[in-house]
Length: 284
Ligand SMILES: [Ca+2]
Image: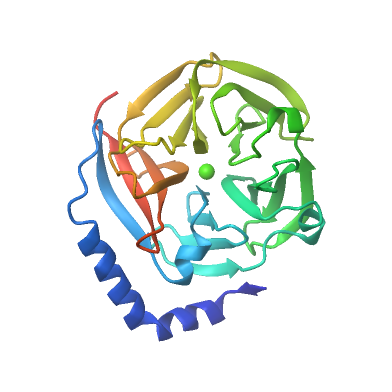
């Protein structure tokens, strides 16, 4: 179920179709407005099977991007953005038996990809499953999350290495941040938010702040920050990508100059393509 070399050959054979699909997408997106408070420094576009593999989650370890689709995982070199390793059936049977059908947001820690997995549309069972970052194979470790804190499933998770925590929140109108221990996924505490945040699709931690991607039902698709000590929520910048995209997960890293790069995944269902857009803030 895991394809590396075979997938690369498959993509080479489909190179021409892929190139045509990319041209159509670029033409379709030629008039996208600029963001406010940030600049776009790069964009990776994924089509064909790469689209399936990269439609939900994203994280990185400084060298590789890791993606999820509904039931899949993908791994790409960060420099080229090229997906070269896929797990096409990533939800383990033990979680399928609990109704799981959706891998959401991802976060990386210590050689493992932490994946948020849920059982829509019932949302009775929410889990964090760990995958070997080298091979994308399920590690055999999963944790069940308390249902009362995940009434609409678990769309994302974010690891905080410094505090040894993993964070989640409700998808719809979240009022608190859920804080779990990375050691055993026991609930440590919940932190009240300074304001409700709706439709959070992904988050990633950097320097004590969660950077959150929200699929607002307007054209703004803003990026919020959440101070994990105080619960203070602020708008970081406005992306202006439009309603034709569904904003998905987010990941962050620092470039060679130490500047923070914020990467946001957007699913363009009509275009059958996903964009991973790289932003740099232009104001503090
Ligand atoms: Ca993420």
